Length: 492
Image (cartoon, rainbow, N blue to C red; front, side, top):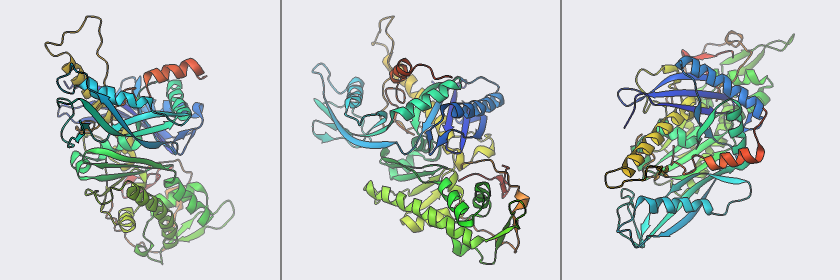
């Protein structure tokens, strides 16, 4: 049963920002964000925690801001994970149904999923998610809308899509959150979380490619027939574009970030060649002048490289002809002018921008209805879905006729991937002032038309895994705001 007093906290540990979201269920069964905090990220590189102490300080600041706004303390959080270390593999599993079972029961499905934890992994890797792709009973494949529980049979098979991550990176996330005085409720692959925020069941059933362009990584999740079929994390994103502008224009990184977010476009042909931007010089140096068309050319080159890799991953999944809902762009990078048009040109697939408003209450602060917050909001939605699934499972387990011993507790069972979706820009500080960037020629108006997950039976990478980590390692020791069209500018 849904409870209006339920509170879920999502923590997005990004390359350029750390954002905390506190969500509460509203009367209309939507989710309202009652607390929000954001701070520049320190100690994180391309989605991977490098400095535990610095990351913990950033986490603590963001959580304190959200906690103060919500008027309540925060203890447990759902954390997103990304980074180049994320990998995916395909496996197949089989279990024999016991003779005493008239038909396949939930415990048989759970046993099949749990056995995947015994697969051979490369040294230093751990399982994050297990996604069943299909179910086969006695050699006959079930259609996607038929659950195996209740089907008569003697043998159950399934293909699995398994997401793994580097064990040390998982440990670093755990220790950073713990050092900030918090407990991890679950670890979720970031594109899975974003999917909860920007996709609906129609998208996932029709086939869709979610592309989350953050500051350090571009995360991809491809769905078909309601099931996640392909995941990957690319080590290129908004920061790479900023670096290209910095090097190409020979300016400071903060200035490059401001140019990208305020004047950047992905299509040089849409920018007048007469438009010039004046940038303050260093110390006694005169101001520098940069053509907006030149700027757009730099941005297009790098963005096109990222999108070509996205196109490659879609083709690699062999689902390019089944993505009827097209590509959905989200994350800070989705706010680049004309990125929708460039994506369609590069991939040949219909594209739209995904805002994280799919399941939010109408009274939610408009400031956070922004592509850069899709992962954080998605973590909250994922947490509520997991909570509902746990209650549903416990209710079914305690139905009349299934009397349990007084001291027997009901285990939390893995969620079927067919059910996990049933409900349901990055910023850095800059020392440059908006007025320091002067456009010397009349501005040509922009025409911007552009603008997860199955529950792991081990709770992310596992409560037992967490305890083992603590036992083995012990406790760890311890912009200036740029406004664009009336809204706060974001890092891409």
